[in-house]
Length: 249
Image (cartoon, rainbow, N blue to C red; front, side, top):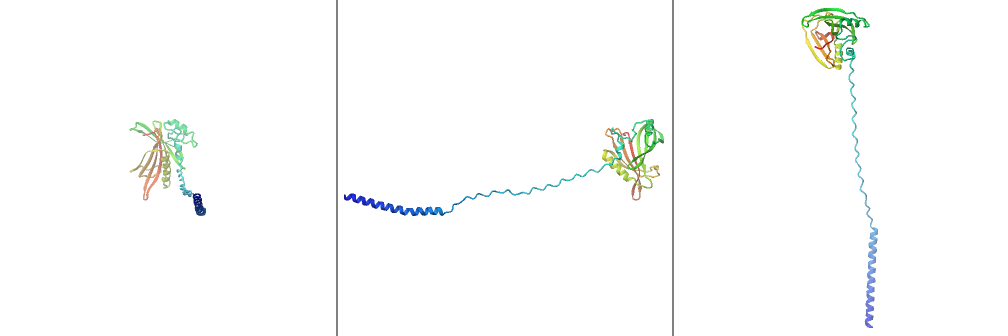
């Protein structure tokens, strides 16, 4: 009985001690909960989205405006026939004297054939006859037509312009030369000094000859632009222009 009373006393002391321990732990837990509640929660801040750097588009250089090709004169268009060969309106190389006379009668001004010279050529063993036949307008000027026949067949056609009153025909030559080079490929060109040249029909003399020669696409006919220049104190003056159409040589 005495042992049982001691056991009860011991159990009572243990229960009191346990209750005291629980009371001491609860404030600590409350403090921890309060601390947890008071502590600010860290919020993850999203990283800023990288912004692509604005790159200015390179300015487009203005396109160059193509330079228009210089206009080519139309003066020499009359010497090119439909088949690409050279000739004069109404006249074609190889025509007989009679055919030329018939063709001349159809021209608006009905030009007459005027014999200038006829001779026997020992080198070519042929009779060469030179005729004048009216005028052909070109580059605003009236060129004299000259026709050369070999044994009665038209061998070459020429247009000739002589200076008048001391004028210089160089501007006319330059205009025709520019058109000639623009239309056809130059086959030959040259510049020659001339001595003891005979006087021209207008009485002018010359000391220099220049020419530019082209051929048709087939090579069956050729055309030569020629200038005769007179030497002066200040340079040269063009006193005669010639445009010759002939068979190749």
